Length: 565
Image (cartoon, rainbow, N blue to C red; front, side, top):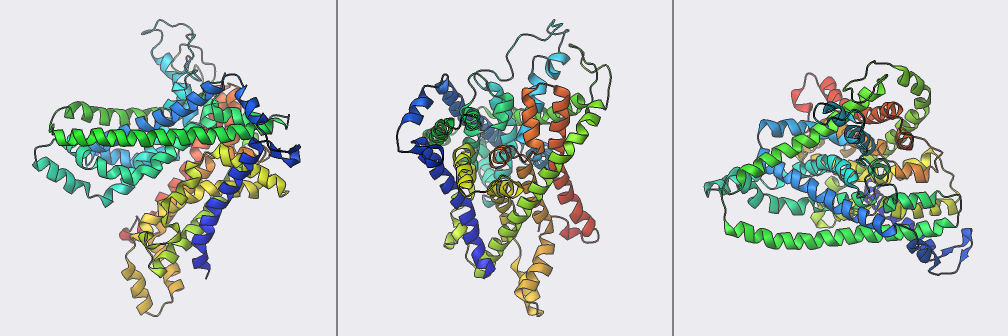
């Protein structure tokens, strides 16, 4: 009975809060919120919103960042897969996907900012020898008005996500056989992959791509670190209006949330139109032949761009570590003149509270998500209803719903709902908010391994007299320990990186490492930021270290059980 309720509970959990949040964002957007004196519908919030200076520039930057970030990330991933599949670089990058994915967006953004800032590591390494700079140049690189640094920071983080989604989908296509057939017709490997595998792969990763568009158009934490300030991106402006002491500005914030929903929808619609155009042009390119033309530049670009993105991410984290122990460090010295632990000693007392809150929220939301995912997947196995046969979770879009709907759009309304119910900001409410985003990632991470599990093991246990429940606990779960721990590590990483749900549902009273690190961005003290951002980047690695090491420790004498089945 409990297993049969699991899919219903998951759908209710994913859909209910989002619909309620959107409803309570739309009503105040048209002037109706009795708790704040809005007893009649009207367009005053929209007039106030449209009168805000720089609004359309904010909309333009948000819209553009969503499309550019997604397009560049997707091109890099496809070129890499086309040019390096089966090579040493391919195996190396595949092993780095999880560590890259585990780095929180905010930590990656800080790392990039410390690299490209006028007084950052790159400028120090080339100065004064190549540039002649004896002092930092007067250049607006970080937080530039067109959001270029914002897009760069998002691209570094979205490449691993799209790569992981692509790697999960590729086994369904048998790409080696497709490429072999194309090569027998005279096509070079890179050209062959792009012409026979990429068109079949894209439909399988369409929903993750849409999730990237939605996230990039409405991101808050990365925009606070790398995005423009005057005016800021639309999502950051909405958060500012929502936190304004003048409660009447919440009506305008609601209108902004609805506008953000429209901007994301417009970006998705534009992408769909581009899909149709590229599909038409792609068919012409495939039919035209061209077995060798352009193969070398594509191969070099595919390998070079993925290496560049990976190096930037890891060098950025190394830069955080360097700044966290740097003493006196004048420009243009490449390295600090001294190393000190003073910044860590000063930060440790204030780190304890946020770190413990982060751990409690991440562990609780991940465990709940894993329990729900296991229950739903086990129910699927026992009923024998595959996704195409009407299972309630068969609409994969429901899993991506919290990822495709902009956070700022429905979380704002969800806060209003919780305030109406008299729910006080506390850890339980923040855990509930994190669960909305952790559950889809945990389910998607675990589902493929669970469905590929050999059913003969369960049947063998049943023939030996074990009940279905005993077979689940004593056979299936031990064999699926490695993928289950990996799903837990992914869930922990997603929860640790959540900024907006923590900030809104916690009302600033539930500090985590992420919220505190982002708050320090306004201060500009790189050494203190380095300490907090490095802690934030390190926490998810603990989960992945356990996910990799624990199966090897428990099954040290059973080689076949150390990895995924």
